Image (tube, rainbow, N blue to C red; front, top):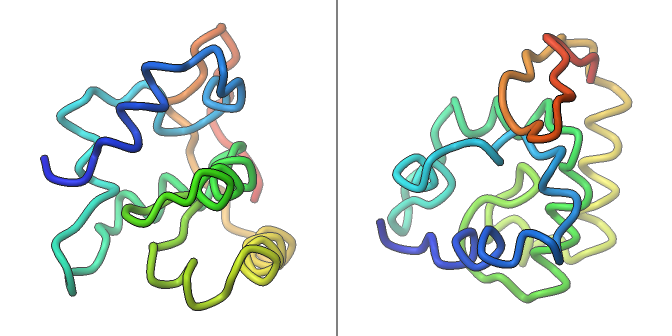
Length: 123
């Protein structure tokens, strides 16, 4: 599972990253984390994109990638290449714009470790 170290480090320091409690990916097993990492030139899976699209922690996740200069992986629904291309402010603005204009109901089935688990979330 090449490239998952940033996520494994976040999980190891869970208490320092409180937004992970709301993250749609937070209950995925370690073997599933490779959904968010691809080989150079490959596209991220549709299931990873869908999971991120409806995630309550998307903004915080993307901010985390910028704050910690994470150069690989899919964070906040955005690839590392796209993050580099846009920069922090434009990337955050883009996901906020997507959130405001989306009318798709996205199932939220994972990521709520402390008992909060809605069946759907309106994006």
